[in-house]
Image (cartoon, rainbow, N blue to C red; front, side):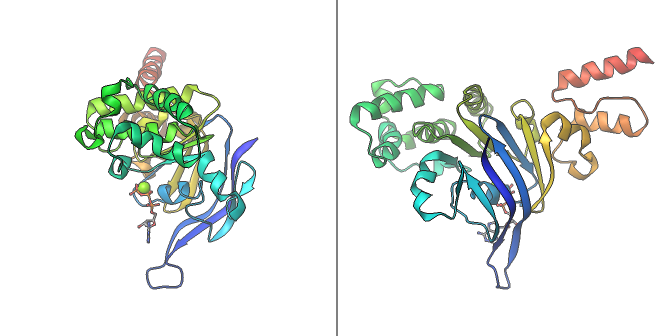
Length: 284
Ligand SMILES: Nc1ncnc2c1ncn2[C@@H]1O[C@H](COP(=O)(O)OP(=O)(O)OP(=O)(O)O)[C@@H](O)[C@H]1O
Ligand SMILES: [Mg+2]
């Protein structure tokens, strides 16, 4: 059963003014329970606008979106929606405001009325989930003293601590140094293994999503270009149109195919591309 159902969703910023901008145009797609959905697209293609509909932060200009069976326009359901959908914004470390790591993670948990013992368990679990050791000294550290990568892991942990049914990540690896990048990707891989959580991840670098996503959505100027199992999207996408998004090895295979070689363009990794080219050379 889909946990998110989007039907003919359009969203217009500043409707009726000179600055009117149709950011989403007639999007229809669904997200299944436990799947990892990747959303990719160039700058300004509507990725952030789309995912902000998942927790009701934005409401459709037209069309509808149902999350866990409820229309996001249903006001009675709004507070439940905030608990069910954990949205990690781009550069979440900029929104850290509590004085200690512990308080940052406990903030949301206190708000939903959990007792102290449960809060302590959840804070520790969430920090372990992002690969951090919840020692006393660390829990009392001021987040501002930590590196950007560490703060981002804490921001993600604060959402994980809420145990959302659906975790939505907007460009979680953007702008990180290589070490921070590796840690965040590890965290996401760990979430990926937990089949109880549905994960939606936005990136304008497709490489991040190739190994993780069950299905991939390709947005272009607010329109849904392609949507389907990751391999199928890669095999069928017109690489010329998405030149900046695709890694070189995928572009190479598509070019070979255009030149008439019998090559499988539905590869995900560099290793698979090398195998495919080896196979081609052996056949010559
Ligand atoms: N608050 C806003 N007011 C007016 N227009 C907006 C607003 N937010 C976004 N837009 C416009 O809507 C379109 C989609 O923006 P959105 O931020 O959803 O794209 P994106 O794919 O997330 O881009 P990026 O990769 O840069 O994060 C863009 O043309 C953008 O300029
Ligand atoms: Mg964005």
